[in-house]
Length: 292
Length: 283
Image (tube, rainbow over all chains, first blue to last red; front, side, top):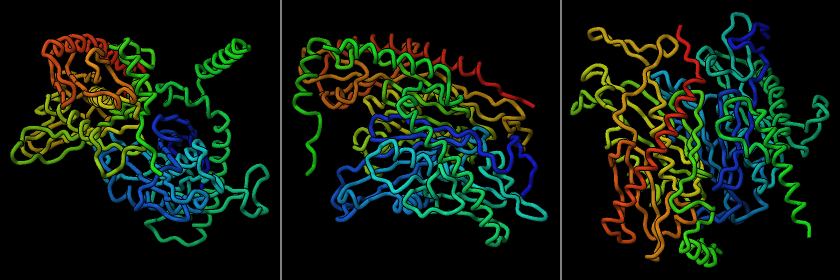
């Protein structure tokens, strides 16, 4: 593995700052925004709910997933991604617990690639990091909704491959600036579930994980050693994503109240901490008043 | 068994009774609007607008294309505003509801047909290259009055957007990347704001501005007015509903003028704050 630092100063196995915000959107049951740095996606989950008779399935819930890019209308690549997302989620959810219902998931990309430069977002589409953020946002939204039983939490990261004279140079979480220089890469989605068998390599605090889906491609020929290296690197990254998601769940109530304009600054702002203490004291005062 | 459509009878009776006395369920005055909150993204032209719990995201994108032969000297502006089930589970993809059709048509009238952006300034090389601006509106949450929120988000996104600087020498066109030369704002003729009033079946009930989802469902008719801070009307839309006298409409227009001036001040202040916090680096 190369030890040279990347253009933004990260090492090869370092993720950008992870941002998870539980949006609290009004029209749906659960929603979450997930971001690797500036690459962000927003997903909403509604269900189990009323389903149209032609979509109804007698023994399990129907998953209706739609994915929308930031610019323009959803094209073929978005529809292909929603089919993949369906295949990823089906083994992770207990769909048979709610037959004849609908679970509606809408994924929205929140960033394009170099949209302001006049080069347009056409053709850039869904890069691996955006796909990873979308999958993570979906997991977080499902946790936020808490209405669909889940076998485990799906965490995804992207891996990029730089051209190198001697060996493959794999990096974790390639940023938008690094994308044009990659010769290959892809997104790896892992299922973290305590139902999976424990392996000797899995650390104690985290549940065991297994690879669920990947779209690793490369324009140069590669062998399965490289694929295994990429998977191992991605697994490390996915563990960090899982840890970040677990920590965010304890802040779920508070992040929804965060004012919209602080979103793109650091997720933990002082104003939010002050608001938390103010909310706590208000509820304590209300409790006193409520005593009869 | 399908659920009967909301609102329920107790909700209906309560809201009508309260409105008759001039009281709204969320405590606002009848002609008081929810304060809009604007959040700007890291890219220029990305704006999220929220009116209370109603949230809309707008994004502007530009690329250079060959103009159609019938209009070789003008740029092209296209608006995409499909409502997804994220706004509310009542909306379905691929089946435009009445609300979606209304929003699409109003956005088209307010942002395109009223000449908000000077199309001739978007021309780079006559007959060969013009800018094609794409405004995409995503409705994130529907808590009533998505139309006003979408129009506000769209117009602020157009004001926020900066297109790359272009140099034309003879027939040669050079597009400078934003990191080389500072990008240029769009030249806009005016800034329209849309205001929606809801009317109710009981003639003695006064109209309310910026209806919530419940008020919108219970209303008998809606009047949408788009105007700018210079007291110029762009669009007046009243598609069916309660019949209104002419002087009632003029009175409402006066109310709308004051609100538009307030909105304009708020938008200018937010844009200035955002621009001050942004460092546009030029090599």
